[in-house]
Image 1 (cartoon, rainbow, N blue to C red):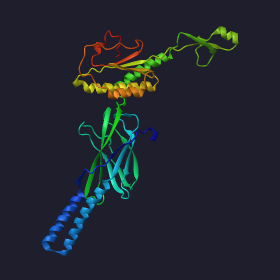
Image 2: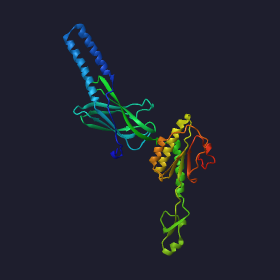
Image 3: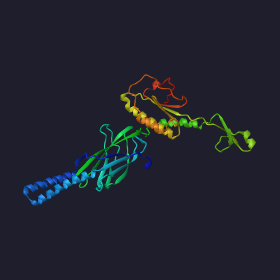
Image 4: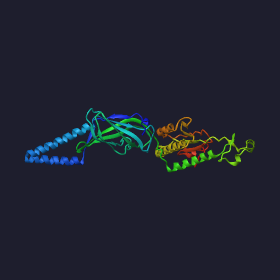
Length: 357
């Protein structure tokens, strides 16, 4: 991923709130430790006492070293400027060791679900760092997936290690505090693809039609129709000449998102927002003029804003949960193609909107 497209990295110190979990190997070691200790005390054998004390010291050293490995680490996450929900997005995760000489070994980075919003983690696969030297930094290219559109303030991760002997897995939670605006999903839906083909078919049909205003006389080309030949100019110059007409202006597409949706229709609203985003993205990519409208909002692309401004609006738009009796606003251009997303299509009769099946 191009580094120039990365935003400023979000950083957070690894706080010493470390959690412990005994591994399967650790349970076997504790069982052996208990059996050795019981045998030493019951038999009063000095050799068993020596083995028991060595095993106990090994366990204490393991806990100290694993805690030292997680201390003094700093995590960074760099994301692209534009991110959409439900789409794997390339990112760069960096782990910096702030300790002066002591390296960190065998660090695993995993994602953690957000318990407040009940959303899954943006990191689906763990990332392994075998060694982070003192005063060093290790980068890894990953893919993150944001589950929903909107503002994302906290990205939760977990750093863990089983170094050095694998008896205990120590983990530390990390919350990267940064604001990320996530666009709606741009993945196509079956019904949206059919609508896109319908709209682009009408626009392309108008592109192929000839205009009515005379533009100029020019030499004949092999792709020109014979009915366009200007015989008077041809006789005058001795070469075939044709009449060229100005092309009609391209017909724009006007998309209206009706935000009036009750509480029980929030799933429909999210689906409508995703369909709007897909249409805006695809039509703009095909160089078709688009006007995105909603209650008290109108964006014309590319005159008023670019496509990312429209996607940003759709990323943050919220439904109007309190219904109103007011009629929807009239379209800006009666000759444009109209696409309306609404729970009440009957309300658009007599407003100037020409509903399309």
